[in-house]
Image (cartoon, rainbow, N blue to C red; front, side, top):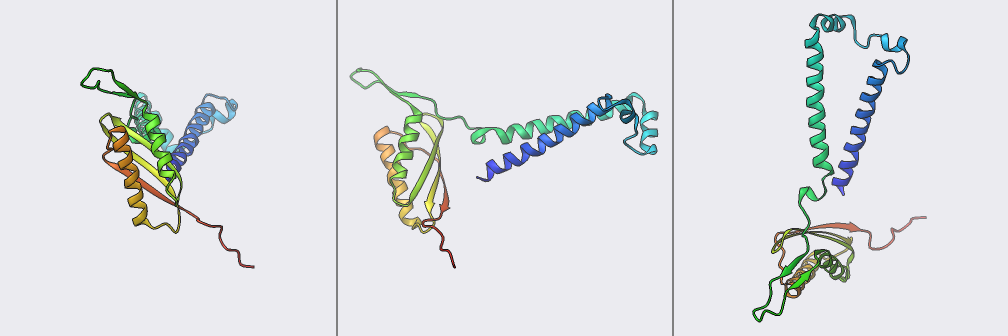
Length: 194
């Protein structure tokens, strides 16, 4: 998935920046020897401006670093948060029947796995991953279907609709909205030309 790839890229960039910043601090503190820590990193003009600025120079750099660190942390948290920040449906119970015979507890994960199994029974679907989000009864469904690359999408749509209707009739739950992502996989091994 592209979201996963984006997260990996941002994590690598963040780790490289954190390592560079940590090594710079280590160098400045004399970790690599005092001769290296005494070398000027910037040219003489920048060093002169820094020296003339006194505490204001230091405060400016700290403020810029703080803003960059907060911005980076927020962006990283948004990217690493699963499911776009949506919380998964927690277990719930159907209200007691009119005759007062009790209530029925439902594990939301079982509903998601049941829908996955039902979707995987569709002939052209190789694999299905389903997530249920929100709070009962307003449940949102997101699914990823790995399908053969020669699938008939009109037929697939009808079969997915039947699976959702089965969920609605058995669990008395009709998810809305429903987001289905279709990933095409090779239906047969590619031909090799000799």
